[in-house]
Structure formats: structure tokens, C-alpha cells
Length: 264
Image (cartoon, rainbow, N blue to C red; front, side, top):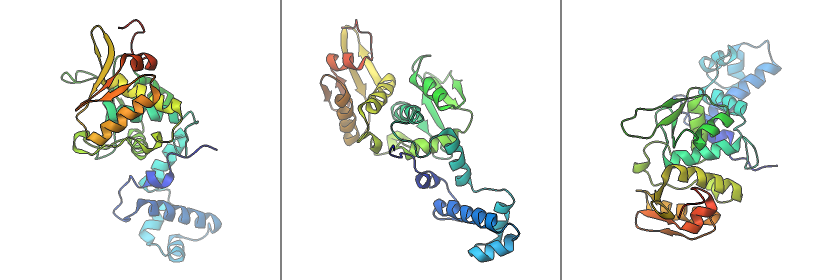
């Protein structure tokens, strides 16, 4: 049995509610109402509300087919296979790639968790990941010298919430103290390799006549240290951390297969 990486409770708590301080409680109350109504289908909203000690104005819409936003989000995530997925599940691989992309060039908006993903050419990891995840998307270009992007056209906010539960940053990365996703700490080598490859696709800078690669990041020191350690853990060669950059040696770059094997 694989370890669950996207838990219901964590995903539900990415939503806001005027009625609930903890939106997981909205999910629990909704389920209690539906389960009670299944056992007592003849009871109306007033009786159900009284029995469960809930406001009738909250219960009545639920009996009429309405659902709290976190419940809808959980159902959508479950339909995609994202809930409770683990390292070995095929649904996790594209999520891992998309998390790496949010760190290395994409973003998730604070207002509604809508993600966008930077592209590096037409054969980007991102496009394959979105297709493997079953998420429709559109390509956005002509962005005033910024990289082209892929943006989901279906269920984007749910995808963004799932990625945030996995550890992807929400909002401006320059204003945050970043940390790599916790799931990478105990992840199998292939998961860490995939994350690194997707990350470097966006951030690695090549140098003429040299096989070394450089990542330039204006990020907090602990994040850069963790990123350098992660890259070195899957590379067959040294990775060095400078003041504001990470240098991936020629041997490490070749082992990661991130550039032409004839380079250098």
C-alpha cells in the first residue's frame, strides 16, 4: 500500500468559508447530513437540522443537491485520481513534474489557486505532465519577453490546490521563505530525478564550450542549500553552491542527461 501524499483534510483546508473556521468541518457536516438523510429519507431539513444540531438554512441546500466548495473540490480531485495517491501511483508522476515547475518558473495565484506553468520549448515536461494528468490547457505566448505558459482550462483551481498540498508555493515566490516539498525527503530516487529534471529544464543555464550548468536563484539560503543537495543526490558528480547560484559540474550534468551528450 503506497503512502498517501494528498490527504482529504489538507485539500479541504485550502478553501475558505464564512460559516466555518475550519473548512474540513464543512466536509464532515455535509457527510453527516447526507448519511443521516440516506438512513431517514422521509425526514425534512428541519428534522435533520434538529437531529444533527445544525442550522436549517445550511442543511436545506445540501438536501436539495448543493455542496460546499471543499466537497466539490474533493470529488474533482478524486475523479482525477489525485486524492490519497502515493509515489508509485501513475497519477503522482505528473503532479511531481508540475510541482517542480511551480518552483522553477510557474506560479499559483493566491486568490483562486489557479496555476500557470512556464514552458521551455514545444516538448516541455509540462505539456506531457498536463496531458498525463488529463487536464485540458491553453498555451499563452506574447508575454512581453517572458516565457510562454501553459494554463489549465478545466479544473485549474483544484489542480493548484492539490499542488499546494504537495508543497508548491502559492503567490509570489520572491516574497516567501521557500522550502522544497517534504515528500522529496523520503521519495524514491526516480521521483527525485523527475523533480530535478523538470526543475532544471526551466532554470539550468548552459555555457558555450563547457558542459557545466548553472542555476541562478534569488532565494533564501536554506532553500538553495536544499536544492543543491537534492540535485547532487541524483547526480553522478559534484554540485556546488555559490552566493546566489548553483553550479552543476560537467560530470553531474552528463549523468542527469540534461544537455547533448556531445557537449563539452
